[in-house]
Image 1 (spheres, rainbow, N blue to C red):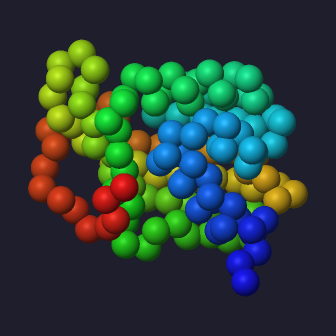
Image 2 (cartoon, rainbow, N blue to C red):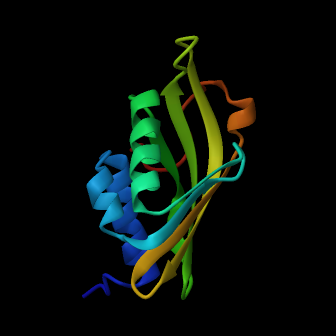
Image 3 (cartoon, helix red, strand yellow):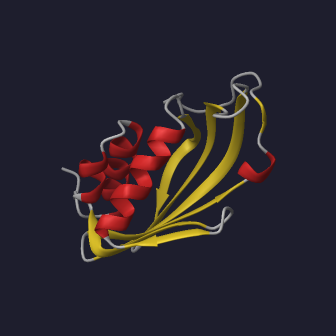
Length: 137
């Protein structure tokens, strides 16, 4: 039986909630002082209310965004997990289908996620190309 508070299971539930665009399910898995940081974009938001608004705006800006995980899926240690992915979406200004690669570093504390740091190539997102390895989500 999986330990639902272990970083791997916790991050799988977090990922599933993010893919489902369920902001409240995401927030149910995080600490009160949760930090969502897109390092590449220079964005950092802290606390439930700020994160709720920020994640909702991501989903609103990129309504068709989906992720392809690498074959390894989420890899976890005792207090963290890492997920490598490719995002695909329609650019909101140009209408072009684009994709970019990234890694999420997710840190856990006391059975909750306390930080999600995103590192990506979004600054040089390119045209969508053929399918890559991994699960298309």
